[in-house]
Each structure stands twice: as C-alpha cells, then as structure tokens.
Amino acid sequence: MMTLGFILLTFYLVLLLFIWIGVIQLKPTILHATKPTTAFTIIVPFRNEAEKIPALLTSLKQLNYPSELFEVILVDDESEDNSVLTVSKALENCVFPFKIIRNKRFSNSPKKDAITTAISEAKHEWILTIDADCSVPKKWLQCFDVIIQKNNPNMICGPVIYKSNGSLIEAFQQFDGLSLQAVTMGGFGLQREILCNGANLAYKKDVFNQLKGFSGNNHIASGDDIFLLEKIKNHAPNSIRFLKTAAAIVTTQPQKSWKQIINQRVRWASKTTKQENWLPKIIGVLVFMVNLWVAFGWIYIFYNTQFLYFYLFVLLIKIVVEGFIIFSTKALFKNKAVSLTSILHVIASGLLYPFITVTVFIMSLLGSYHWKGRRFKA
Image (cartoon, rainbow, N blue to C red; front, side, top):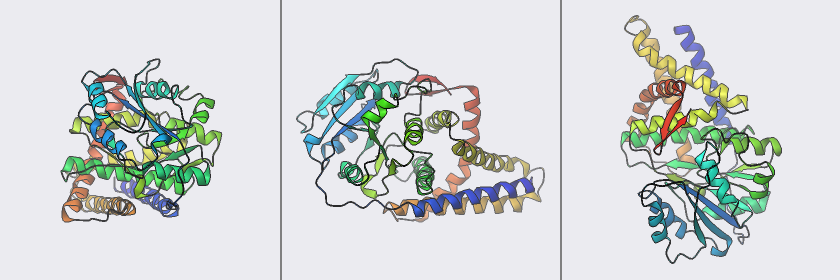
C-alpha cells in the first residue's frame, strides 16, 4: 500500500509539474486598441433556466461591442418553466438583434442539437457558444476579435470560472473549476490541447459545417466542446487559441446540491472516456487512481496504524500542491485574494474530492445520470 502510494504520488506530482510548466509557457492575451471587425452569432441553448438566465441577458446588454456586429440566438430546449417569457421580457428594447427558436431534436444530445439548429440560422461567420447560467464581461467580444484579427484561428477557447459566495459547496466547485482551467491552459501551453469549455467557445461556422459538426459523436449527450476541439485539431492542428486574460472570463453559477454536482461530473466523465486522444484518458486514470488510493486509505488506517503517518504525509503533499496550483491559477486571472477561509476550503475540498471522484466513477459504471430533468446514458 505504501509502495503504491509513493508511485502514484510521484507520477501525480510529475503530472502537476508539467501542467504548471504549460500554464507558465502559455502567453497572456494582450488586448490591443483595434477597431472591431469580427461579426459573431452568440448561441444560448436553454432549458428551464427562468431563474438563472436573466443574469446572462443583463451582461449581454452591457457588452462593449458594436451592436451591428453580433446577434444572439436563444434556443429553447423544451423548457417546462417560463424561461421563454423571461427571455422575451428581459430583451425588450435591447439594441442588438436576437431571436428565440425551438430546438430541433434529431440525436441523443439535446445541446448539440440546439447548437446545430442555431447555426443553421446564424448570419455571421463566427459562432460563440455560452451556457444560460453564465454571465460575460463587457470586453468579452473584444477579446475574441483581437485574437481573430491577429491570428485568424479556427477555434478560440476562453476561461470559465464558478461564482462563489464563500460556502463550502460553492468554493469546492470554484476550486475544481480552477483546476480544470489549469489543465486546459497547461495543455495549450504545451501544445497538447485536450480540454475546452462550451460555455466560452468560439469557432468558424464554415469549419463547423466542413467537419460535419457533431456528426460521429452526437449519440453522446455531452461533449459539444471537446469533440469539436478534437475535430478541428485533427483538421488544422495550429489553428486553436486560448484567451489567457481576465477580460474574457465567463462566470458560471454553481450547482446547489452535492447530488447535482455528482450528476454534472458523471456527465463530464461520460465524454472523456469517448475521446480519441489518449492523453486525457491517461490523465483521468492517474487522477482517479490517486484519489481512489486516498479514499481507500481512510479505511486501511484502521487495519494498519503504522500506515497513518505515511498516509497523512501523502495527503498533505497532495493538498498543498493542488492548493498552490488553484491559488496560482486564480491569481493569473487577477484574483489574488487568499484568506484563512479560502485555505480551509481548499483543505476541505481536498479531503472531499477523492470520495466524490470514486462516487462519480461508480455512477458512471451504473450507466446513466440525470440532468435538467432528463435521464441520459453515461
């Protein structure tokens, strides 16, 4: 048990080192004072989001970008609340063009169907997807425009961070999200792009159509982001960029219960195992094995008390290094606040994470999960 723990910890620390090297190597995005020229179609799929979507709509109305250079298409995915009415009222007298359309279902993935439906009606060359429970900064579109004018890429990935009011459940999600951002940026910095987030993702409409969109993976409910990333990377390896700037951060609202968090992560896990790229699978297996060892260690302590000190040593190293990456990633986005409460939350999250990881793995084996009132196969 000790030998296995030492081996796993060593490989895990090497992985985190490479991730951090990649984060450092990824160059920050510099926002030049250029005249906006890129036209965007912003796509917002929504289902039963009457409570959360007003924050997004308010932020869209505050965008500092020429209104003639973007449109918003909101796709109603069979909402059972008053989401459509909420959207209509919130966007009364707004200065940018928008439309509310119904989702046309044809696959096992409602979100992919919604995006495909909207793209068929999009007027502009660049597609920008965002989730209904998010909000955007004022210079959001400017960040994408600067990269497009400078590099002319096929896809641009942006940062997404969870809001947190200081509670443990929200802090856990924010820290987990920051760790995913570190992996994302580390991959981009090492030119091994493996992750992106569909809540802040832009790509060319003609490239999407040329690659036949989500064809080949729309039997998988999730993955509108990483499967398209893989397609574009295989099509044009050097045509993907990441926005490493606080001005491009999309903030998303956290889940309200641990059950929702686990269901969300089962949904995420279901797409990772289907990726063609071997690297995220290896990373996933290593992370799972480390957390399985930690979770099982709590039980093993009662059978071998001599194991306690070694176990606490491994746990301490793991939490300290993870905490360093989390706070450092947070600082990259100009949020340098480190308080006693946040440190305690990192420790608590580090203790909880192994058990949540094992739970997600077991639920993935059971073959299904619930999301937004629907049941999907994992």
